[in-house]
Length: 261
Ligand SMILES: Cc1cc2nc3c(=O)[nH]c(=O)nc-3n(C[C@H](O)[C@H](O)[C@H](O)COP(=O)(O)O)c2cc1C
Image 1 (tube, rainbow, N blue to C red):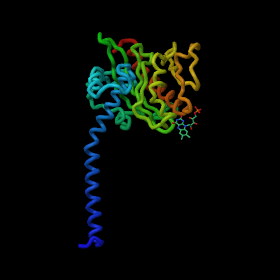
Image 2 (tube, rainbow, N blue to C red):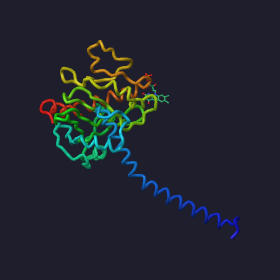
Image 3 (cartoon, rainbow, N blue to C red):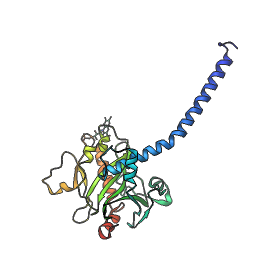
Protein backbone atom coordinates (compact mmCIF):
# COMPACT_ATOMS: atom_id res chain seq x y z
CA UNK A 1 0.00 0.00 0.00
CA UNK A 2 1.44 3.36 -1.00
CA UNK A 3 2.11 6.06 1.60
CA UNK A 4 -0.39 8.33 -0.21
CA UNK A 5 -3.23 5.83 0.30
CA UNK A 6 -6.21 7.30 2.19
CA UNK A 7 -6.89 3.93 3.86
CA UNK A 8 -3.32 3.81 5.19
CA UNK A 9 -3.59 7.38 6.54
CA UNK A 10 -6.84 6.56 8.32
CA UNK A 11 -5.45 3.29 9.76
CA UNK A 12 -2.26 4.99 11.01
CA UNK A 13 -4.24 7.90 12.52
CA UNK A 14 -6.68 5.50 14.23
CA UNK A 15 -3.93 3.26 15.64
CA UNK A 16 -2.02 6.32 16.85
CA UNK A 17 -5.03 7.84 18.61
CA UNK A 18 -5.95 4.51 20.26
CA UNK A 19 -2.37 4.05 21.48
CA UNK A 20 -2.27 7.65 22.79
CA UNK A 21 -5.66 7.26 24.54
CA UNK A 22 -4.49 4.06 26.25
CA UNK A 23 -1.21 5.72 27.30
CA UNK A 24 -3.09 8.77 28.66
CA UNK A 25 -5.65 6.64 30.54
CA UNK A 26 -2.84 4.53 32.00
CA UNK A 27 -0.91 7.66 33.07
CA UNK A 28 -4.00 9.15 34.74
CA UNK A 29 -4.77 5.88 36.55
CA UNK A 30 -1.18 5.32 37.61
CA UNK A 31 -0.59 8.93 38.71
CA UNK A 32 -3.81 9.29 40.72
CA UNK A 33 -2.54 7.53 43.87
CA UNK A 34 0.69 9.57 43.68
CA UNK A 35 -1.31 12.82 43.38
CA UNK A 36 -3.52 11.81 46.32
CA UNK A 37 -0.44 10.97 48.38
CA UNK A 38 1.22 14.30 47.48
CA UNK A 39 -1.94 16.23 48.39
CA UNK A 40 -2.08 14.47 51.76
CA UNK A 41 1.64 15.18 52.34
CA UNK A 42 1.11 18.86 51.52
CA UNK A 43 -1.88 19.00 53.88
CA UNK A 44 0.19 17.44 56.67
CA UNK A 45 3.08 19.81 56.00
CA UNK A 46 0.79 22.85 56.19
CA UNK A 47 -0.93 21.68 59.37
CA UNK A 48 2.45 21.08 61.03
CA UNK A 49 3.59 24.57 59.98
CA UNK A 50 0.39 26.22 61.23
CA UNK A 51 0.82 24.40 64.54
CA UNK A 52 4.46 25.63 64.73
CA UNK A 53 5.78 22.05 64.70
CA UNK A 54 7.72 22.36 61.44
CA UNK A 55 8.84 25.39 59.44
CA UNK A 56 6.65 26.03 56.36
CA UNK A 57 7.79 24.06 53.31
CA UNK A 58 10.45 22.17 55.27
CA UNK A 59 10.88 18.48 56.10
CA UNK A 60 11.30 15.34 54.03
CA UNK A 61 8.29 13.10 53.37
CA UNK A 62 9.47 10.72 56.11
CA UNK A 63 9.92 13.58 58.61
CA UNK A 64 6.51 15.07 57.84
CA UNK A 65 4.80 11.68 58.10
CA UNK A 66 6.55 10.94 61.41
CA UNK A 67 5.66 14.29 62.98
CA UNK A 68 2.08 14.08 61.75
CA UNK A 69 1.76 10.58 63.23
CA UNK A 70 2.26 12.25 66.63
CA UNK A 71 -1.06 14.10 66.28
CA UNK A 72 -4.45 12.75 67.37
CA UNK A 73 -7.69 12.94 65.43
CA UNK A 74 -11.16 13.47 66.86
CA UNK A 75 -14.61 13.65 65.30
CA UNK A 76 -16.62 16.57 66.69
CA UNK A 77 -20.42 16.74 66.59
CA UNK A 78 -20.60 20.41 65.74
CA UNK A 79 -24.03 21.28 67.22
CA UNK A 80 -23.29 19.76 70.65
CA UNK A 81 -19.50 20.14 70.80
CA UNK A 82 -19.22 16.45 71.79
CA UNK A 83 -16.19 14.61 70.49
CA UNK A 84 -14.76 11.10 70.10
CA UNK A 85 -11.28 9.93 69.27
CA UNK A 86 -10.64 8.06 66.02
CA UNK A 87 -7.59 6.66 64.29
CA UNK A 88 -5.58 9.12 62.18
CA UNK A 89 -6.39 6.84 59.22
CA UNK A 90 -10.18 6.95 59.85
CA UNK A 91 -12.11 7.20 56.59
CA UNK A 92 -14.26 10.20 57.68
CA UNK A 93 -14.29 12.79 54.91
CA UNK A 94 -15.83 16.14 55.89
CA UNK A 95 -16.12 17.32 52.27
CA UNK A 96 -18.15 14.20 51.40
CA UNK A 97 -20.29 14.63 54.54
CA UNK A 98 -21.01 18.25 53.53
CA UNK A 99 -22.45 17.08 50.20
CA UNK A 100 -24.60 14.36 51.86
CA UNK A 101 -27.97 15.83 52.90
CA UNK A 102 -28.32 13.16 55.63
CA UNK A 103 -25.02 14.23 57.21
CA UNK A 104 -25.18 18.00 56.78
CA UNK A 105 -27.49 20.98 57.11
CA UNK A 106 -28.46 23.55 54.52
CA UNK A 107 -27.58 27.02 55.78
CA UNK A 108 -30.01 29.91 55.44
CA UNK A 109 -28.76 33.10 53.79
CA UNK A 110 -28.47 34.77 57.18
CA UNK A 111 -26.50 31.87 58.66
CA UNK A 112 -24.24 31.39 55.67
CA UNK A 113 -21.78 34.23 56.21
CA UNK A 114 -18.92 32.10 54.81
CA UNK A 115 -20.93 31.36 51.65
CA UNK A 116 -20.55 27.57 51.89
CA UNK A 117 -24.26 26.65 51.39
CA UNK A 118 -24.12 23.46 53.52
CA UNK A 119 -22.37 22.56 56.76
CA UNK A 120 -21.45 19.01 57.77
CA UNK A 121 -22.90 17.78 61.09
CA UNK A 122 -19.52 16.40 62.07
CA UNK A 123 -15.97 17.63 61.59
CA UNK A 124 -12.59 16.02 62.11
CA UNK A 125 -10.12 17.98 64.16
CA UNK A 126 -6.49 17.27 65.00
CA UNK A 127 -5.11 17.53 68.51
CA UNK A 128 -1.48 18.38 69.28
CA UNK A 129 -0.25 17.41 72.74
CA UNK A 130 2.77 18.50 74.75
CA UNK A 131 5.31 15.78 75.69
CA UNK A 132 3.55 15.51 79.09
CA UNK A 133 0.28 14.60 77.33
CA UNK A 134 -1.45 17.92 78.06
CA UNK A 135 -3.34 19.63 75.25
CA UNK A 136 -1.17 22.04 73.26
CA UNK A 137 -3.22 22.98 70.19
CA UNK A 138 -6.38 22.14 68.28
CA UNK A 139 -6.41 22.14 64.48
CA UNK A 140 -9.87 22.96 63.16
CA UNK A 141 -10.94 22.63 59.51
CA UNK A 142 -12.36 25.87 58.06
CA UNK A 143 -13.74 26.83 54.65
CA UNK A 144 -15.36 29.82 53.04
CA UNK A 145 -15.71 31.69 49.78
CA UNK A 146 -13.21 34.39 48.83
CA UNK A 147 -13.55 36.32 45.60
CA UNK A 148 -13.18 33.46 43.10
CA UNK A 149 -13.09 30.26 45.07
CA UNK A 150 -13.97 28.33 48.18
CA UNK A 151 -10.88 28.45 50.36
CA UNK A 152 -10.18 25.38 52.51
CA UNK A 153 -7.78 25.47 55.40
CA UNK A 154 -7.17 24.99 59.09
CA UNK A 155 -7.34 27.33 62.05
CA UNK A 156 -5.07 26.38 64.94
CA UNK A 157 -6.37 27.28 68.40
CA UNK A 158 -4.33 27.05 71.60
CA UNK A 159 -5.40 25.04 74.64
CA UNK A 160 -7.28 28.02 76.15
CA UNK A 161 -9.84 27.61 73.32
CA UNK A 162 -9.43 31.30 72.45
CA UNK A 163 -5.89 32.21 71.36
CA UNK A 164 -5.05 31.57 67.73
CA UNK A 165 -1.96 29.44 67.17
CA UNK A 166 -1.92 29.79 63.39
CA UNK A 167 -3.86 29.56 60.15
CA UNK A 168 -3.21 27.82 56.85
CA UNK A 169 -4.93 27.28 53.52
CA UNK A 170 -4.58 23.94 51.78
CA UNK A 171 -6.77 24.76 48.80
CA UNK A 172 -7.78 28.10 47.30
CA UNK A 173 -8.18 29.61 43.85
CA UNK A 174 -7.69 33.32 44.59
CA UNK A 175 -5.47 35.42 42.31
CA UNK A 176 -1.76 34.77 42.92
CA UNK A 177 -0.17 37.94 44.35
CA UNK A 178 -3.56 39.34 45.46
CA UNK A 179 -6.07 37.09 47.26
CA UNK A 180 -3.64 34.20 46.82
CA UNK A 181 -1.48 35.86 49.49
CA UNK A 182 -3.67 34.10 52.07
CA UNK A 183 -1.05 31.41 51.71
CA UNK A 184 1.92 33.75 52.22
CA UNK A 185 3.86 32.67 55.36
CA UNK A 186 4.57 36.36 56.21
CA UNK A 187 0.85 37.14 56.32
CA UNK A 188 0.01 33.93 58.17
CA UNK A 189 2.62 34.93 60.78
CA UNK A 190 0.33 37.85 61.79
CA UNK A 191 -2.21 35.42 63.28
CA UNK A 192 -0.60 33.67 66.28
CA UNK A 193 -1.58 35.32 69.57
CA UNK A 194 -4.79 36.89 68.28
CA UNK A 195 -7.91 36.22 70.37
CA UNK A 196 -11.07 34.85 68.80
CA UNK A 197 -13.57 35.78 71.54
CA UNK A 198 -14.06 38.95 73.58
CA UNK A 199 -14.78 39.03 77.32
CA UNK A 200 -18.47 38.19 76.64
CA UNK A 201 -17.49 35.11 74.59
CA UNK A 202 -18.65 36.85 71.40
CA UNK A 203 -16.66 36.19 68.22
CA UNK A 204 -14.50 39.30 67.77
CA UNK A 205 -11.71 38.24 65.41
CA UNK A 206 -11.67 40.10 62.09
CA UNK A 207 -9.41 41.49 59.38
CA UNK A 208 -9.03 45.26 59.00
CA UNK A 209 -8.01 47.29 55.98
CA UNK A 210 -4.60 48.86 56.57
CA UNK A 211 -2.40 48.06 59.54
CA UNK A 212 -3.49 47.04 63.00
CA UNK A 213 -2.64 49.68 65.61
CA UNK A 214 -1.09 47.61 68.42
CA UNK A 215 -1.78 50.38 70.97
CA UNK A 216 -5.54 49.89 70.64
CA UNK A 217 -7.28 47.36 72.89
CA UNK A 218 -9.17 45.80 69.95
CA UNK A 219 -5.83 45.01 68.22
CA UNK A 220 -5.85 41.62 69.89
CA UNK A 221 -8.85 40.65 67.72
CA UNK A 222 -7.55 42.24 64.50
CA UNK A 223 -5.33 41.06 61.64
CA UNK A 224 -4.13 43.20 58.69
CA UNK A 225 -6.21 42.53 55.58
CA UNK A 226 -4.37 41.53 52.39
CA UNK A 227 -3.52 44.68 50.43
CA UNK A 228 -5.36 44.96 47.11
CA UNK A 229 -7.53 41.99 48.07
CA UNK A 230 -10.30 43.33 50.26
CA UNK A 231 -12.80 40.81 48.91
CA UNK A 232 -10.66 37.77 49.71
CA UNK A 233 -9.90 39.35 53.10
CA UNK A 234 -13.62 39.73 53.80
CA UNK A 235 -13.97 36.05 52.89
CA UNK A 236 -11.29 35.17 55.45
CA UNK A 237 -13.02 37.25 58.16
CA UNK A 238 -16.30 35.52 57.39
CA UNK A 239 -14.90 32.01 57.32
CA UNK A 240 -13.03 32.42 60.60
CA UNK A 241 -16.10 34.02 62.22
CA UNK A 242 -18.40 31.28 60.89
CA UNK A 243 -16.24 28.36 62.05
CA UNK A 244 -15.58 29.86 65.51
CA UNK A 245 -19.22 30.92 65.89
CA UNK A 246 -22.39 29.15 67.06
CA UNK A 247 -22.75 27.13 63.87
CA UNK A 248 -19.06 26.25 63.99
CA UNK A 249 -16.78 25.14 66.80
CA UNK A 250 -17.91 27.56 69.56
CA UNK A 251 -19.55 24.78 71.66
CA UNK A 252 -16.59 22.46 71.14
CA UNK A 253 -14.09 25.15 72.16
CA UNK A 254 -16.25 25.92 75.21
CA UNK A 255 -16.11 22.24 76.23
CA UNK A 256 -12.34 22.22 75.80
CA UNK A 257 -12.04 25.32 78.01
CA UNK A 258 -14.14 23.68 80.70
CA UNK A 259 -12.95 20.10 80.65
CA UNK A 260 -10.04 19.71 78.23
CA UNK A 261 -9.68 16.85 75.79
C1 LIG B 1 -7.43 40.29 37.47
C2 LIG B 1 -7.84 40.69 38.84
C3 LIG B 1 -7.77 39.77 39.87
C4 LIG B 1 -8.16 40.10 41.17
N1 LIG B 1 -8.08 39.17 42.15
C5 LIG B 1 -8.48 39.49 43.40
C6 LIG B 1 -8.45 38.52 44.45
O1 LIG B 1 -8.02 37.37 44.30
N2 LIG B 1 -8.93 38.90 45.66
C7 LIG B 1 -9.41 40.16 45.91
O2 LIG B 1 -9.84 40.42 47.03
N3 LIG B 1 -9.41 41.08 44.95
C8 LIG B 1 -8.97 40.78 43.70
N4 LIG B 1 -9.00 41.72 42.73
C9 LIG B 1 -9.34 43.10 43.10
C10 LIG B 1 -10.80 43.30 43.36
O3 LIG B 1 -11.48 43.38 42.16
C11 LIG B 1 -10.98 44.56 44.20
O4 LIG B 1 -10.53 45.65 43.46
C12 LIG B 1 -10.17 44.49 45.46
O5 LIG B 1 -10.58 43.40 46.21
C13 LIG B 1 -10.33 45.74 46.28
O6 LIG B 1 -9.32 45.67 47.28
P1 LIG B 1 -8.63 46.99 47.88
O7 LIG B 1 -9.78 47.78 48.42
O8 LIG B 1 -7.71 46.46 48.95
O9 LIG B 1 -7.90 47.64 46.76
C14 LIG B 1 -8.62 41.39 41.43
C15 LIG B 1 -8.71 42.33 40.40
C16 LIG B 1 -8.32 42.00 39.13
C17 LIG B 1 -8.41 43.02 38.04
